[in-house]
Image (cartoon, rainbow, N blue to C red):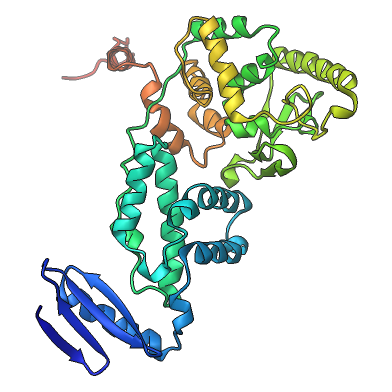
Length: 383
């Protein structure tokens, strides 16, 4: 085995498999790393010596990643929104700690993380969830780099699965009618109706409270969204973006549907008695608790099946609402504000392809506008 002494404080070794190992001494103990190139070893050694000079201790090198990421999450709470923090907490608790928590943070390698992602994929965890795990992991490890625990971020060298092409399934107006007919008398009827006519996001709908509705002015304020729908953990946050806080006008038919729903919910509360959990929500389970998205999707798909419709996502009702509004000639700026987009250009980017006006229609329209029409002039025009 070839060996080259880099300096008096560290050594670099070339291994039989062609990779390179580097060692440094800290408080009488050896720190080591393995890299593909000699230059990477030299960089690691230089950075490690700098960290030691800055006060890095042996104890800090023995921190398990589970301990580190838990500490990082606690300290990061003040620098992110409550919604983001809760999401990170769930991903760390459910996926990251059970799989990587026992590894010492300075021993965490890109291959560990890559194997972790591959394992989640093999277990059929959703691609978007794995990508969110990657974002969380990278953020935590970047802090380890900043504080000197790591010389580089190992998550930067691991590849989560690529996001699939975005799909958008929408219902046409006839299919929407079929769905609403199938939903008549179902407890989801008012929720589905409001989703289709408003284009609100699912968690905005589930976060609505009765005091958000002005019955006389027929206006509905969107000021929050549901974050966590279970037990004492029920939590809310502001809308997805600052432009999501908005007010929309409702039609008389929608107001009547919501009025009947309010009366029915009130009777349900009386019959449930002390078991009722009061959150002031517009859409609830039979005990007053907010809907869990998983249960909502299950019941929604049953209604789709009963109506003979394709199995779309509940979120696709938002796309359906946008499509219907645009194809009815509603101005793009009005649709954008109703959906809670920051700019009309975003609405066009997302839904522009759904607008039915064809090139042929445009061609005929411009022809009609510019068709020369003979006019009688008072004075003869010289040629």
